[in-house]
Length: 158
Image (cartoon, rainbow, N blue to C red; front, side, top):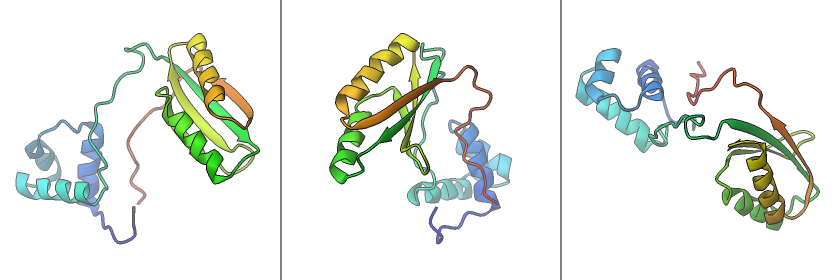
């Protein structure tokens, strides 16, 4: 969030509700935060226009669709040039099962999070990854045994 975008307590209350259920009608959100529909809608619209609300999506239960296995992959590389980074970015973008990618500080260069059916499915994706992206010095996979907490909600920093 840029320093010039102001979010007050009422905006946060609206965001908390939307992060739990974005399908609620504006009048229901307004009732929960003590606003009528129009002022509530204007606040939501402003937060969308300012990019605070990036988009509204449906959250799919991965287990219900058969992607019950979460894999974390750490990557080390000896290359950090712009050409390699471009190839790496294209390579991971082409693999739908990679749902997050982070450039890291410290011993690990990149951390990937994948949702897959099972270990064999991951192995297929691993082969695609190493085939698409040259210069990977070390690729290490860790499988989640149990998800103890999951949320898409961004916490209020105040």
